[in-house]
Length: 104
Image 1: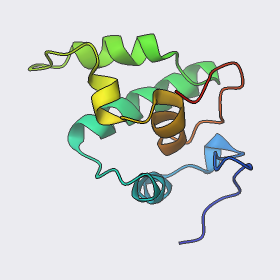
Image 2 (image 1 turned 180 degrees about the vertical axis):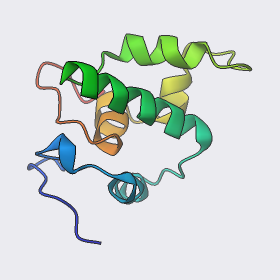
Image 3 (image 1 turned 120 degrees about the vertical axis):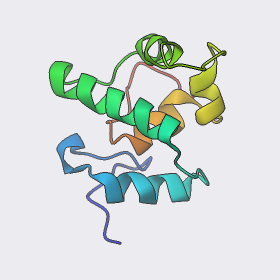
Image 4 (image 1 turned 90 degrees about the vertical axis):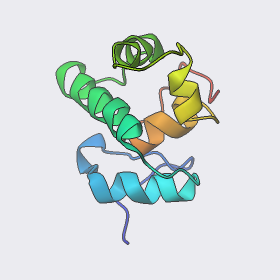
């Protein structure tokens, strides 16, 4: 698959170039099999990006996931993306790398 342009760290340069196939390829590169829970987080992140033009703070995604029926852990985002919100969730969701955040 031909990916849209990415920066030196592998994040999309233009978040509007993101699509499902891009997410699946980034997830494959991160060795993540996307589940409905992953897609719920990704859809929430994309919607927030559309509204605010910036990646949502991890706290907002944690709150969103905590409202799902059956979710017992406030750390769900880190269970879904074990190598970090920025490194995996933001990349797979097609966000630019948030410059003020660490990759953890």
